[in-house]
Image 1 (tube, helix red, strand yellow):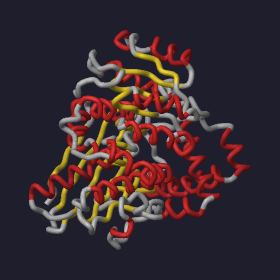
Image 2 (tube, one colour):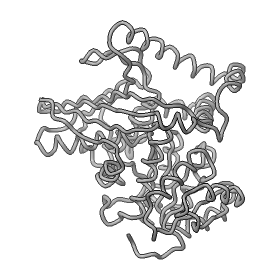
Image 3 (cartoon, one colour):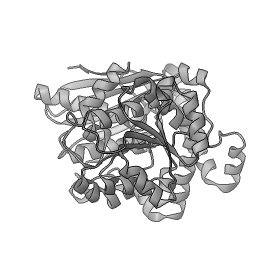
Length: 410
């Protein structure tokens, strides 16, 4: 760990939120006792309540009042810590001032965003500044998009080690058991509203290279559709569209470009959701594909949104502890290479992927930024989990009980 030059080594901003408290609990169980951790949010009273529910190891953590709409409080927050991890969303509404404060202060930053338009704006406004100050700005440090990003990185490493050439056709098949929180739904509402009112955001949503560091240098390789219909893997598993593909695929392509297209300029990367085999799988895949479209349309229209609001979780609510414990995720990523060799990566873990497992991913990403600076890739600016944390995060997640492995197929 670097020598302390600020009041805190790591501050969790948004600790009173649903996911924020889960991450705080993970840090309380896994942060070394000499790590100077702080909890930040708008209300000191709520922060005290959260801290009181944490293990005794966290009872001397600092409490810091800060508000996304108060630039002075954010400047002080960023200047007082080496690492700031934020769960305050929707990020398009609250996140940019936090990124700017960290970039200006040279403070490493992490978040859980799955909002492509927010990431694009953060890149455009803060990448150059962050590279100047040495800040690592790391978006999508949860189920969006750690399993995808790290799995493809490991596939690249395997192909490179074997001299198999660049990756060509890569597909992730996601299977999981989990739920949604009110914060996730609110984020989806915000993205739909933005696309409906702003043609630039609609263009970004449809551009497979929308997070590229240099859009004009991207190859003309045609990418799979994010929201396709029903498909089938070579093993006979029926598939449906994967809701998170629209952000995960762009994070992976940004990782490729930030590394000089090391994965290969002919990379075609797509993600789908695995269902079942046989006739039942076909019916389930079709129903899921149709249901996703109906849900998206209903959430976008004012009248049907009001009806959905009666049954969907509100901000601050989420799956029960029992539901979080019973969840799991397994992402299987199959890749072919220029040489014809093929590989399969598996990223998997227990716990609801968006909450229990995400708390592990976010907690380990934050700890890596705070503790592993001398082992991380030598990079600064607007990064991805693969380019900012890379193999170090893979090692941490394996040690935390998650699976990250690559198997040669041919």
